[in-house]
Every structure is written in structure tokens, then in C-alpha cells.
Length: 416
Image (tube, rainbow, N blue to C red):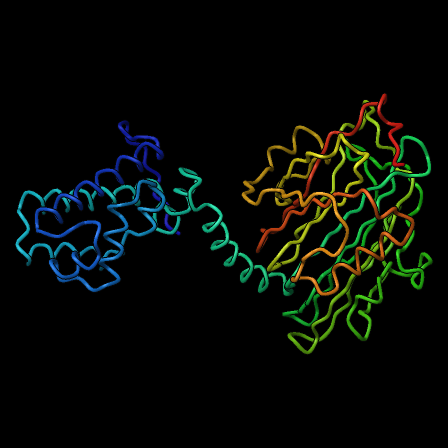
């Protein structure tokens, strides 16, 4: 990375400068190609008239046609490709005035890089903010790089980071029962000395303070007791993953221990627990309810599902969010946390009410996992599934869905 601070008095803001440069490049390329007798919208015509190879002709045509500045800049050839393009135009007899205009446009493009970004890769990232078109594809491209780099730095990776939440009415008025299933599907170590937190349980108020709630119960009764991680043994790989129990004040954590690297040490670990009688009416201290996943492990896919009982009408339109965990930590629902908010282009999708099964091919035996949670005292009927899936989520960050909790006067809503 090269940065050269410059403060010229006539410097345009990046957004305006970039749009103007792209407009000039497109106009100059279109004019010189048309003047040379080529059809700017036809790569074959460009290749035949100017003498360019198929790939370079295709890029030039895409630049001329692209209304989106981000798309146009993505197709700009490198320095060598631009030189070939301009030299070929000169040999094909392009008008000197058109050629001079094309060279000025290319010089201005190189100035844009020099002044605002220092390199082309950074320029393309900056351009992403100028248009939503193709944003998800660009996000995924950069997240692939982050996945690879994060796997190397953190020393682990997983194919699927799974989090399922099931919210249903409790036996106590004004409260809910919340079951959670968390899993790392096809977890692999890159380094043998790496451990990884698999399960940790706490409840918080909006300001981050501890919320007094009943102890959670494991979904799989075979793993009851404070000394056991709440594994769902039926859905874990064999032999069962080995976990280490750590206690810090009121928080108990279970971590995957060190182990073999690569495919020979690959494993799947799924934990599940249910918490009873969580208040869900609004108080001065609590206005929001959240279901989130800490994306601290390099993952090819995040599957974040919420099942809401239809009686919770206040929660039927959740807001998706993605917050960075790199900067200062803020309480869960405090205004300060908005400073850490990241762009999120994967929308929440409601699949409506209906019985299982649910198509989730990325997670083996997904339906049976959900059924196991329902079998632990949650009524199966009347639930809506709201999935939020994202490929190659960033890290470290937190993704999830938030809803405003009910006001006191509707806290008595119950399922029938």
C-alpha cells in the first residue's frame, strides 16, 4: 500500500471526481472507436477493426456500455492493457484528435488513482460505495479473500457457522422461552495448537449489564449438569468433539481443545440449550430483543435462523444488522454501537408459517435439529421461520436480527 498525502486547493471530493473521470473515459473510448469504424457495443467488431484480443475487446466494450461507474472501473485494463489499446488504435489509423482525447482520459484515470487511492485495488473498493449495483458480488469477492487470510491468521475455519433461535410463549405471563442451537459444521484447524470457544451463556440488558434469568437447560438430556457442555450428541461428529470447561465469574465457557489439522481432524460440533421465562415486555432498561451470531471464525457460510411464534406480532418485522467487533465494544443496544455498523446486503427472508421440513441442504439433518428443540417443550404449530443467510461473513463481527420488544399492555399475549 502506498499513500501520498496531497491537499491541492482544487481537489474534487472523491465521489464527484470518480464519476467525472468515468464519464470522460467512456465518452473518449466511444468516440475513438466509432471514428475508427468499430461498433463500441460489439466486442467482435472492436477486436476486428482495432486488432485487439477477445478479452481486451470485451473489457473495452463493457466500459463504454456501463452506466454504473463501479462496473466501468472494474473493467478498466491494467497499464499494459491500456497501452496496447491506445497503440492499436494509433496503428489502425484513429484520428489524432480522438487519440489525444483517449490518452487524456486515461491520464485522468491514472491521476484519480494517484490522488485518491494510491493503487487500483483500493480504488475499486472505494468505488463500491458509489452504486448498489453488483454490491453483493463485490462483497463476496472480498470476503473470499478475508476468509482465506482469516483462516491463516486465526488458524481455523469452518464450512458453516450455524445459529438457530426458537422463540415461543412461556408458562409465565409476559415471558418467553428461548431455545438456541449453535453449530460449527465441518470445523477444521489450520494449526494444531488452536482452541475455539464453542458455547458460552449469558443474558444482558440493553446497557450490557447482566440480566437475572433462570439457568438454561440442555436440549439433549444426556449432557445435563454444569460440568457438561450442552452438546446435541446426535448431530455431532464421532468421536464426540472434546471440549474444555472454563469459568470466569458468572460466565461458563466451553472450548474445543487443540487437535489435528486439516481433514483428518475435521469435526462437527452442535450445542443446544433452552432458557425459560425471559421477560419480553418493554421496560426503561430494555427496548430491544436480539438474536445474533458472533462471526469470529472464518466461515464459508453463516446460517442464522429465527423461529418466532405467531403470537409475538411485535416481532414479525425484525431488522437485520451487522456490527464490527474490532472497534470499542458498546452495550448491545446502545446508540454508540451504531458507530460500528457495517453494510449488510443480504436481506432477511420470511418463509412464512408451515410445518417442517425446511430446505437447508448446507446443514446435514437440519430439520431433525429443529425438531429436537421443539420436542423440549416448545409447541411446533404456529411458528414462522425468518432466515438470514450470508456467504463468507466478515470477521470479527456480529450478525443478527433485532426487534422492539412489546409494550407492557400486550405482554400477556399467549398462544392458544
